[in-house]
Amino acid sequence: SSASSTVSVFDITSRNVIATISVGPHPYYSVAVGTKLYVADLNGISVIDANPSSGTYNTVLSHIYKASVQGMYVMGTVLYAQRSGDVVAIDTTTDTVITTITLASLNSSTGTSGAIVGKKLYFSSSNGSVYIVDVDPTSGTYNTLTNTISGLNGGGLFAILVGTKLYIPSYYYVNVVDTLTDTLTTTISVPFGAGGFRGPPTLVGRYLYFANSDVGSDGGVSVIDTVSNVLLDPVAPV
Image 1 (cartoon, rainbow, N blue to C red):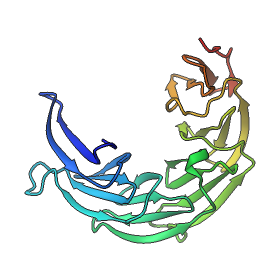
Image 2: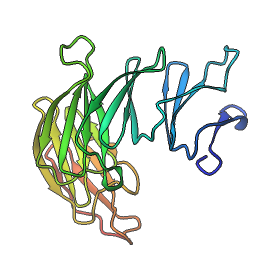
Image 3: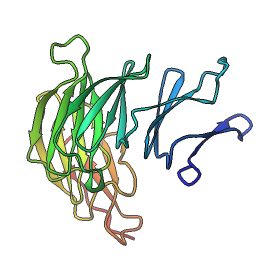
Image 4: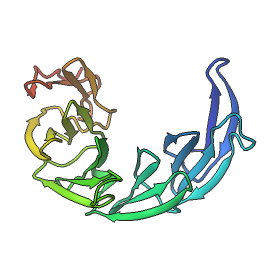
């Protein structure tokens, strides 16, 4: 709960709240790594013990990386915490910072998203670029920025991987990045907006559905055929 700065634990069998855990101010994002839950808030990341056989079950073990983060991504035992201009790699076995990877500005208020594809971590930004970080621990360029793709029409809050193609929505476009060659292959115009502000896109078979982001477009949906990368007959706002 952002309002109460807490995390509620539900028993899915009884459908009852079994614990309420106080964390930092306004928690807004969480990821699980092993038996620990990492909760991002305005002051950093709270680490919660989610191991039911532990003596500290459902308590905060520590509060690490005391700065606001915009997203968190997991590769093995490493947690990548995204900020406005860099990414912090955290070892979840010790909950300590391994390194900080500098990127160009990633403005969350105007659209940014990330995705792990294979052993690469992609970050899109509203400045029209995608930044690629090597997250392969056996690589000589591990935890470094290895490539930048430019020429995108902005960047949205949600990216989705379909096969080897990464679909990145902006306000009135969907950018398609080939993750095998790390190139922008096409940009699809979406008349009613696919910025993702009404929720992440949904893949059903070969079709990708975007909730339209235009103000007043309640119920409007845009559909992309991911085989041909063609926008099908747009569903007008209803």
